[in-house]
Length: 117
Image 1 (cartoon, rainbow, N blue to C red):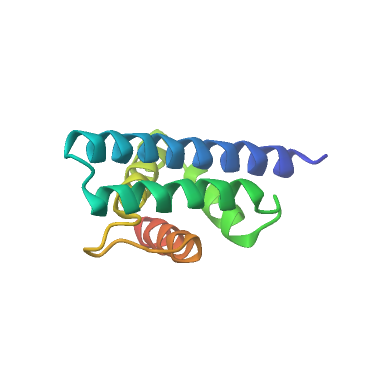
Image 2: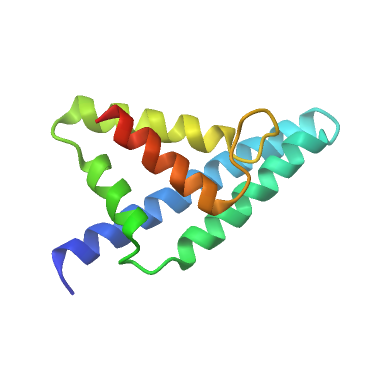
């Protein structure tokens, strides 16, 4: 196994963890707001995205682009990249401007990450 594959596997795992973390947050928000349908749908979209990202082949071009950008050139650029990605993840599944599918999410993550480079 090459170093690149190990890095991509680690990035994919980190992305799945971030999706799951946001799913838990949205689920808690939905419960606190008496089952707000919008938040419940967002939590489900995040659950689906986490499963679909986890199932992506490690050589997926989108994962490669995101992992490369997340490595950045320095600590500041890496931190900024993660912040931008977390913002996009946080909007996933919400009706007001968020992405709806995993493909849309990955495209939005790639676009936002590229724009920040």
